Each structure stands twice: as C-alpha cells, then as structure tokens.
Image 1: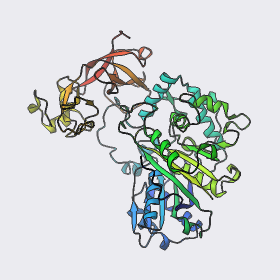
Image 2: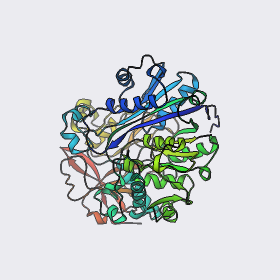
Image 3: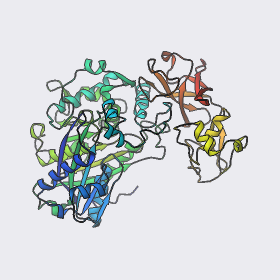
Image 4: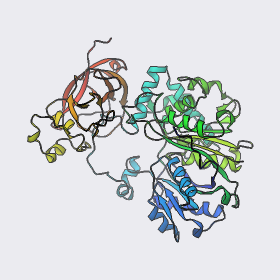
Length: 389
Length: 155
C-alpha cells in the first residue's frame, strides 16, 4: 500500500465548537444546530463569513447551510458520508490541494422519527425523516446497527467476551461524561446498572448503544501556516485514513481480525509520526461497546480477545474509569455513549480541545498527541492522528 | 448475465416488488427474489471461476466475469452469529414478547459464504453459534420466506 504522506502536518484544525448534545427533542432543525456551532467556531477563530471558502458537513446539505449562514462565496464544498473523519480528511485534502483555504466542517445530530417514540409523534420530525412511510423489509437481517450486535455474539463465542467486558466501556464513558457539560448523559453508572439495563438485541443492552440526540459541532480547517495566525493553537493533522476491505457487508465480513479497522491501524502506523505509546489521549469509537473493545485490540494495546482484561488492568478505581498506563484516558468526554450519535465529531472536537488546552476540568495535563479511531467494522472504519507541536 | 430459467416470465418486476414489500429489489438481486417465489434459495455463483458470492453483485468480484448465475444452494450450514431481537420493525407474525432470533449462517458451499434469516420452531435457548441448520420455508404476507431450522446433528 501507498506510503505517500504529502498532506502530513500541512493542514490544521484551528478551532472546534459545540452546541452540546441533549437526549430530548429541541424545537430546532439540523440547520439551526449546525449554524449555531458554525457561528461560534468562526468567531472563536477570529474569522468572518467572508473568510470561509470551503464547506463540508453531514447534515444539512451544504447549500442549505451556506444560505443560512450567508457565506458570500465558497469555492469548494461536499457532503461526504458519516462518520466524520471522512469530512475532516476530505476537507483537509481540499485545503491542501488549494480548492479552498478555510473550510468549515460541521455535523448536526437530530433525533429522527426512527429513533424515539417522541420523535415519531413530532410532525416536523416525521417530515424530516426520509422514507418513514415507505414499506420496510422484515427483521431478518443484520444490516445496519444490528450488525454490531451480531458480531458481539461472535466476539463472545470466539474469545469468551462477557457482558461485563462490554459494560466496562459503558461505565468508563459515563464516568468521563460527568465532567463534560456537552454530554447528554452525565449520571455515573455501576456494573449493576449496566447489567440491569434493558436488553434491546441480545447480547447488547440499552447501555451498550449511543443515545439519540439533538446537537451540533463545527470546526475550522485551514493550512497549518494560516492556522498559526489564528486565535487558538493549531492542531495539526498528522495522518488520516478511511479503511475498508472487500467483504464489507455486515454478514459477510470475514472476522473480527479482518475488516476496516486493520486497514486503518496499518495505514496510521505507516503514515503517522507517532504511535500509541506516544499519545496522551485515546478516542476509540463507541457507538456500540464491542466496537471500542475491538479497536483497543486491533490498535495493539493488547492481544485479540483481551480488551476487557486490558480495561480491568488499567482501571483507576478511585475515579471509576480506565487510565491506560495510569495516564491516558479513553474518550474523556464520555464518547458517543454519553454525547450521543455525534458520528465521531464529538471525539474529534474533544481531541482538539484537549490539544488546545481548553478542555476545562477534563484537561489531560500538557496533552500533545491524540489518536482517534472512529467508526465501526464494515464500511466506516476511520483513523485520525492529531498533534500540537 | 445469465437468467435462471423456470417460471420467471410469469412474474413481472412490478409483481415481484408487490410480493416482497419493502425488500430492496434491484436488477442485480431480482433473480434471488424470484427464486424465493419457487422456494429456492439462490446465491450468485460465477460461471467462469465457480466462486460463490453474496449478496448478489453484477460481476464476479474474484475474476470480474459478468457471467454470474443465481444458483440454488443446499441450505445446509452452521450458525455463525446470532441476535435475539427484543424489539424491532413491525412484521406479520413476529411477536417480540418472545425475543425474535436472527442468525447469520455460514453455508456449506463455501467458507465465508453466509446468509441471514430467522430460526423457526426452536426455543431461543437452543439456538447457539456452531449449531447445524437446514433451510426451510415459511409464509410472510403470502410470499415464501427462507428460514433455518436446527437439525440437531451438531458436529
């Protein structure tokens, strides 16, 4: 595989802002949530609407957000597919290539009518949920979210993983979220709370899954050179990858040792300047708890099947969370299990804040390097290495 | 692309879609659904290199031959992974008060070749990864639906 690294450290994330995320229905649209985060980050970086010439996000579509924000002229835009490392990688490449110079990257999460009964009752949310009234196929599939549950069963079968192993991920997230005002769920949980939570799809429970939320994040991506002149410390993009293998359907994926995550890890190791022993904070995706355990193993923190034991070994009983080698927190913002379906925009935002030294009482002392391993197994495994020099 | 002979001409694309409401039927997988109407589980197989692949693709992913045929499989296999749905989309005859099993079965035809369906006529405690199954059929909204049943012959 290629070892070209033309973009390495040439592009920076200059700032990150959030509306915060809540697990109830706000009387707001995707556009409203995204716009709030975007205005905040543009101002925080000391920029204006006229400085933004690139626009890249999940929802809403770029033309809607450009119009809402009154961005006078953009020379590049895109709506790549979630999770958000796709948006960061694509926007950074656009900046690096000269398609634009200051790219605004955004994500808005919105509780769709599929997610909750309260959303289904909301007429505006029904309209905003595509395909709601279409006939749907039966439940005899593991496509989509169910796929992670199916592979959780395989995880247990092949490696003897237990519910308690999954539960440690959930507990770690909640403990961390207690110190994150942007998180939707901030009450600490115990293993009993986890085990008592409602079984949704055996073997996974309610507390194994991210929460449906309303909220938005926004970021400024620009050249490293320009970022140095802006208001906040520049966070350099050292390496980025969207990893995928050929058997990428949920039920055809080869194994827990051969899917997109391995491509991500192999690529980051080849293209990045540092690796797990050098980082100060780690962000494995946690839309479902088994994803986190598999990332921990595939990243090389421990052997296959040992991620639960790894978390126990590195558990800080006093604080009720994992601290790798007594030092490296895992998702210090509480992850998607606590912030909700940020599609990793929350993981990247927290990484930026940690590296800029603005993470409040979650701050990891003098954090310089962060590893983000976003997405799941099938067609959405992603990696991002960020640092501050 | 080869077309499976039999009674295909009797079922128009319109009728096929009506018989399987909500199923994502395309030009690439229509032969599979026509097979269901005959209670045949059809999986695509390359006429040239003989490799099976699922779900249906327009070309053989192994040799790029466009000569792929939806071909009957035995339906024998081993449970590879499983889910018990305590909730899920509404479907006729599915009562989530008893968690509804969904299994991905590795088919005997080829390592890594899998098909996902429910398990019929079993209590959930009997359904386990590694158990042997065979194909059977049930009705869903008047159309045949492939299911697996436990054989009790575990190896």
